Length: 287
Image (cartoon, rainbow, N blue to C red; front, top):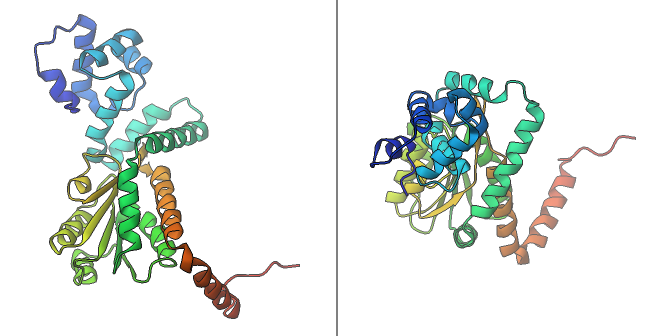
């Protein structure tokens, strides 16, 4: 189904009520704000009832208002500048308990990600990572934190892990210039999507590597390039994106790869414990 709500509102021969036409007009002119409103708040802003908003969403073909709001959010999130995000967040969070609102939203994104994740794709990703000749992990800008975390633990499990740093475009290509068949490229890309990250993924695909995309939805740029796609919801909170659900997905991948290689796990960590002890990697408890 077409999920661009502006296209849906402008197409077809729908007979909208006066109130529904007011909703459509407001969304067309203020979609960046409407995308993050509850049905009640949108109705109050437009001057119609909450039930009118819900009926409007159904009229457009959605299964309810939450589906319509997700479609609006997917349409606008990658387009908003930091200044616009702060303005939207002000409207979203004004008069609310910020701590509760943010953590509740994170919980909802975790639950939605778990329910919608394709298990076959997850298993394929685990198999590919565990069997990679060389594993390249790439995340730029805010996704760099996810890549560093994944790279740290995968380095304990997989023999040749290469964490690609968020540097200039030319230096990125220098770091992946030898990628090819038998290798796996894991690209982490969340809004606002990094153009350099996508170009590097295109390069890896042309070179014959297996490309895995960790991103937020099927319409994300990296999803269109990848051989294996794994989606975890992210959510806009002011000028930043919450990456709690993507981090949880990475945790699951790490544990699943470890389970796949459990025969060598005891030996690996036994050796690591000796190294850590010998070189005083961890501080002891002070008495």
